[in-house]
Image 1 (cartoon, one colour):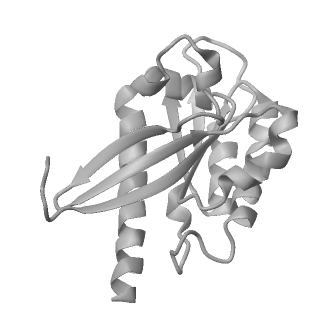
Image 2 (cartoon, rainbow, N blue to C red; image 1 turned 90 degrees about the horizontal axis):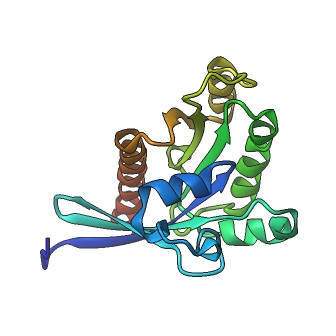
Length: 190
C-alpha cells in the first residue's frame, strides 16, 4: 500500500463510556494483552489504519477512563479530537445517563473549531448501544437512545460486543467522514 502520491491524514478519536475498553480489547490487537494498565489513557493510543484510493487515515484511538478521579482531565484529553464514540449498555441506565455529559464535554473541549476544521461536523460523533446477548432486563430502549442521538444531532448504532463487522463499519464510516472534513479544510486553504 505504499503509494508515493498518497495523502496522509492523522486524526485523534476518543472512545468513552461503559464498554469502550471491552470493545477495544475485543476488536483491536493493540489492546489484546493482559496488562490492564494499557486499556486507558496514560500510554500510547491504539492506531487503526484506513486506506481510501489516494488517501490514508491513521486513526489514533484514545480510550478515556471513567474513574471519578480522571473526570477533571477528561476534557483536556478530548481537546483536538476529530471523533468521539460514546458507549453505553442497554441494560445499565447509569451508563446511558452519562452519554449527554460526555457529548457536552467533547463539544466544549473542541470549540470554536476542531483541529483546523472550520465547520465542525457532528458526523464525527456517535453513540453506540452495546446490546446484551443474554436475556437481561433492558433499562434503555432503542427508541429512547435513538431519540437522544437525534436530539444531539449524532449517529446512533447498536452492536453486540462480538460483532466485528458492525464495529469495523462504524469505524470506517467515521474515517470517511473525518477524511472528507480534513480534505475540505485542506482544499479551502489552498
